Length: 163
Image (cartoon, rainbow, N blue to C red; front, side, top):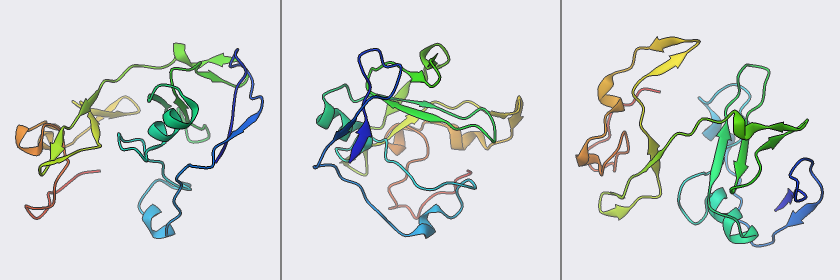
């Protein structure tokens, strides 16, 4: 794994750092079917030891934190920041002033096994300032699911989901 590092100012990419003990996985393209057009891959951001935040934290000694900056339009790219770092986009834009904090809820266990998942508390979904009708039960946080949302352990034959 090679990753651009940043100088102390965090304003420009500087050099590359390497880590030999970094787990990356390649898989079949069929797993991308049904995702947004143009998706080229997926990244694990969960709480497991093989997630990107956990591996970056262990390899480069920064906190196991991340920030996701979603795109604002079809022709714009999003970004992911790891660690506490300076959230700087080129050219010299401090993204920390643009980010909105969304707390993550930890699901302690699913089916008796510690979960590496976390969830966000969703009350509604808006697209272009219009509320999208979604079955409110799918946004609930019932205690019988280990605490939050739609996680299902598969023992009860699954559960219908809206995406």
